[in-house]
Length: 148
Length: 148
Image (cartoon, rainbow over all chains, first blue to last red; front, side, top):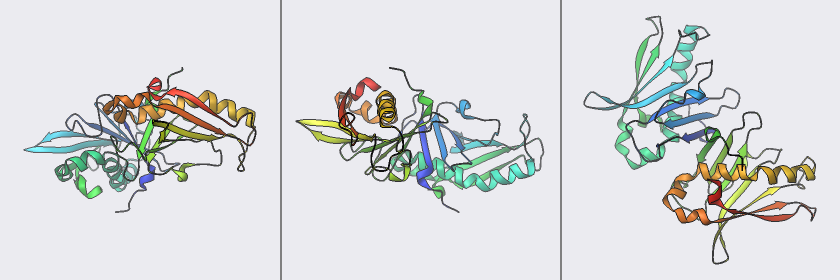
């Protein structure tokens, strides 16, 4: 896994969200700048809709109850909903770049994980949303801890 | 004082610096994007020299012992050191925009101030560095708490 440049990761905590709590209800919106390679992680009660551009290249992830524990469950939009761009290419880019987005999340919110190391075992499930069943899949990207 | 847009403030903690500690040794480098109006606050043991551009429009501030207490002591470079731009204009912009930079600092690092409300009383002293004695002055911008 290619490591991200940590000096390019920025965080913005919103509303009641603090560096060390709460876990449940914590939602991440991860965006980036193609130009500067900066990665922006918004930590809030809601997804940062004001940061979502027509490119629809954001990754959203939230802590959610899952089976008998919790999971980081998120999604990306491959196609549909007026998204411009080839689904094959968007799907490929999202899949290849996901480790980068997850590293940004883990880096931005590392204080939470440092405080509760067990959280590093949380599985990450990302739904690739598409009108085409070939792309419309949920991938398990493994435990968030592998992205630290 | 015109209030900054809090959704434009991003923080990046580096090295040993955490949201709630330590106070002493904490150094801020505040930069901005003229294009997007985003404000970036780097919190680290050293100033984020990798973020300083030839524009030299950064504001640097650190917690330092001062008289019988502490102060937030910082500086900006008005002219000299190869800085391009009219000193009169740079001086004016730095002075007028300083409340914005200080609001960004207070917003970015609000967890620290929330934990230790007394810190809001800390005076902010900014040295405007210039080879011209008209501009080379240290201004007291008041208590950091007024920028919250």
